[in-house]
Amino acid sequence: MTNKKLSELVIEVSLQISEIYNHPEYQEIDSKGYEPERTLGDAYQAMVDLNMEIVKKEQE
Image: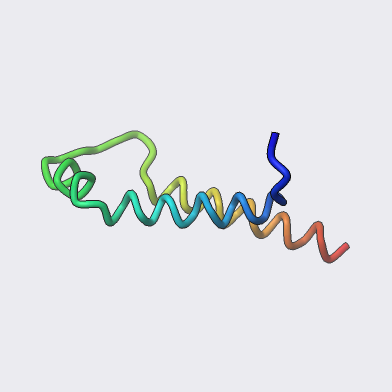
């Protein structure tokens, strides 16, 4: 179990998704026609959406 706030974890995951996207090994895989059902962009957008919900909750 983590002592980090959910918002901190969401930020960390978002940064890691960005690192994966920019990693040379991922770029190589992607350039060879990698077409997953869900993309890194989908994962990143999920973190953006989750963060928006967290912010809403904190403003209540």
